[in-house]
Image (cartoon, rainbow, N blue to C red; front, top):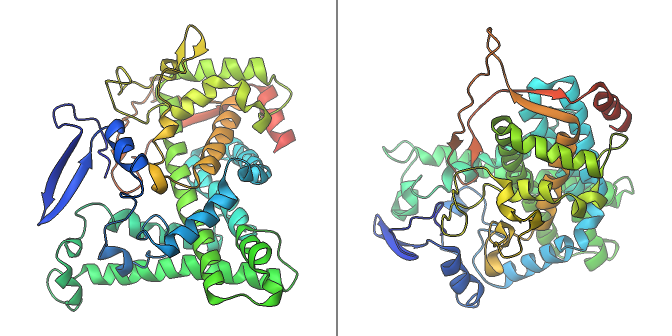
Length: 419
């Protein structure tokens, strides 16, 4: 595992013991790269978990052991999410961002729930070709329920059965075995995520009613659905689509929630970003993907707040996108957090290019037309926002409130025109 913060007194590599199970901690980027990048042929396997199959997530490529199934699934991911391939998803991502800023305009108090919906709707369309049908969409609800299981169960030490496997044989009513009831619910949700949207998408595709999707592309282009496909082929398409949908929406949702928190706490950063957007984009249009290379400060915001390595990034607890610049130019001598934030070696997240594209277009779109500020109390004073986080497999900010207002009447008109 990678330590969540840099602990200077612990050493680059150390071990801890959890109920007899040794855990090796790689406490620096260098140690992780030395082992997981340079020696990936040795260190690409996964711990054989007791919990993962219990909660129904053993089909997830991130949790699979290293072997033929993992390599096949990983290869399929790479073919559809390498830097060149992800450009085909940009229209859906751009559409999702523009729908989201319209929702912010009409109901800014609902910014967290609408963010989850629009991110989920985009990835649902990419994965399955299914158009979401409003906030109560059944497929988005399936995805939201499904990620609860791994987020709770896979936190190290959350379930004793991971370290005491004999507990899985105890009946649910036995003291200490109550986790089995939760595991059964989590497994049912995981199976629904894997099978329900896939079944709809493939039935529609075969009937000629469906649209292109990741699931149909894997089956049609590579294995020719019309001529019959093997069970293994359908299993591959199910796994890739479900991981894309289940994991992709949740991680981007967490990151963009944190973006709103950071902007409310750092108005100086927000102003710099908006000055860059005004200079590059102007008042007559919204940002798109062609602008990305011309918006280095927006890219710096996306990269900031990732690592707590004080030896590489001075004052790591300070949100400071300016650290990536030297004399007004991008500092290429400073390590890029994107090189390690998504993991290492053969286990690096295969959807990282898609995720970064989504985060960029949402950040740029929101900041171009909105100001994000703390709420005010009855006396007009800013209400304090505490930047606390909820720990888990995916980390979220604790609930906070902020005011999200159009930057001008012209910005409001632009939202209505373009969204």
